[in-house]
Length: 601
Image (cartoon, rainbow, N blue to C red):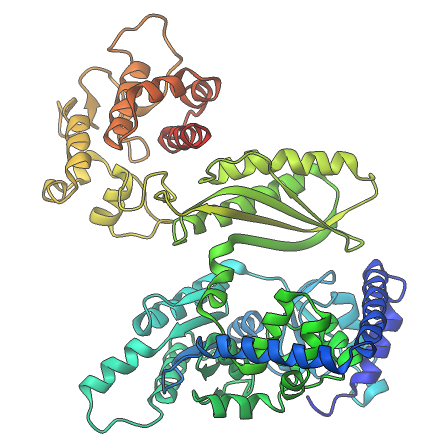
């Protein structure tokens, strides 16, 4: 793509979008950046020789501290693997006739991914679809033929299935690999390298490159020919840069020694580093005449003088090619979130539905997060004019389920829509959970602490061996009694107590309860768990009181005090949970109330 006339393409894009809210917003940001550049140049001109000497001393002290965090590993074990044009590649795999045409996954409003043919016309991800279409039609203006951009509706379920195939292979090489998006993975190959060093005598000097090539080949075969690019480096920041060096379908390794790292960075444009966007790139170039990481290393004294301490330390790490361990895990430990872009709308019902979808996605990630469980949540809204608003729920209490997250954030969405002009539409929504309580054990998606299971989860894992989406509750006839013995004692006792009242008078008839003549079906194996309207009195034989007692037993086994449980049962929220959920186990919601009450104490 080096032959593309970028200046001409940028001019066409500006012409198409010059009246749009997006361009106006960008122009405002550019004006702010220009004002910063002007004031920074004035500050640099006022630096005297004594101050410059002090700044160089500060830079040298900072470098000594940062060098202590440099990896001492002689091999480049940090590995980043990235699918090539992932969404588009999946669609072209399934529709080979698209391979020679410019393809964009997305719509006329926004493009998610494009293939490399479309990129020849300057069409890229996160570009409005109508702009990409116009660029293809005006190809002759920058030396390419006129063509039509083909739009394909995204199929995220299909992309998730492909990503799971790749992740299963990644897990063989690094059980603790990280993946922050469907098309990318971060692996530490040190364990795999050490294992092979012990098994083989004539080992290759670049075994990490051999392993990376092996992973890419296996994923390509398993996914039907999809290609990946990979990068190796002494840390993940450098490995990510390396992964972009040989795209598509290639790999690159940055040496692990200090000299090798600095030699690579010397001529590397700063824009190639994650965390340095267009605005910061412009500021560095205009105010400090910095183009490459080598320039950045030389101009660090001026950076320390004019930039914030946080930005100065980040740029110092970038210039030296160092990524501290805390910094590499910061993204993971600070928050869990997800956001989606869609056709701009102000319809409250549609926006509430999208908020619920986001809450479900984020809630499913809580159980896999090692930092504890979150106590705060926030919603991000981007208007059609590209103004961004973030609102945080004021309540501080555990948020463990999609319903709990939605309950906190839906009033914020409603209030924002009421306060905004009726003509303002929303085009992006995001949900973020943060403020993790690391001292307390976080709960899984079933509402139980990690390591415990509900009966249904135990059956799912031990009996049917089916995926979550295919699994259905088993009938009593389908339960293998030998499996029951394998269950944890608390689950075994609970299951046996549930099975006692079941009898079967006639082998040809469905199972029935001895106490209540009610059918047991695949969707209702435990009819006495169904909620009934609350009866007056305290008849222990009533289904409601029996269920409440079972719930009390489960909660006390977890260590909650009976007095606290009764208080929650008697509270307004507790009564609503016990009486209003006709088809749900109230256990996870009651646990959340108990945790919230304990944190408020």
